[in-house]
Length: 153
Image 1 (cartoon, rainbow, N blue to C red):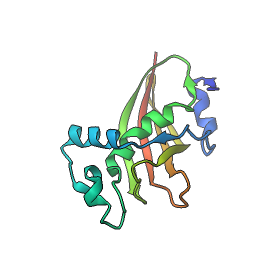
Image 2 (tube, rainbow, N blue to C red; image 1 turned 120 degrees about the vertical axis):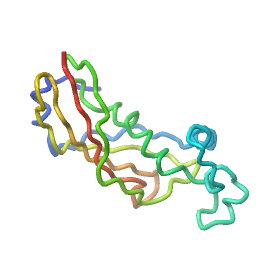
Image 3 (cartoon, helix red, strand yellow; image 1 turned 30 degrees about the horizontal axis):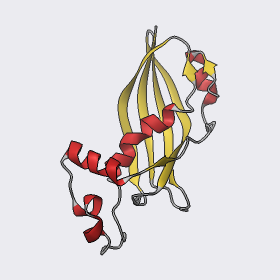
């Protein structure tokens, strides 16, 4: 169950690992839809027959697909902020695609708040360390820092 906190209490959560998200299956349909949306139809993503002959032995998710589902995964267990008007994606730092995500795999996200800085009236900058795990794999699929601007009413 999500907890509701005041924005001023967010800094007290720095370094505290949140509960991992639920697992999300990376399906071929999701990969194909991402390929269509981005125009990246490289065979290792969309052609199971050709991809089976590569070192991956099947199709893999685009690294940027994995990156793009992180906000949905993080939202599940991030604390609710009282009076939050909006959260604005401010960017990413240190993104690394450590290991390919094979189609049919399940991923989940772990998050740890690293920075909370007031940036003006009703605005706070946050930096969150994110690790995306693939079920059954020792190495993570992705590690990154997600940056956001939180605006309260």
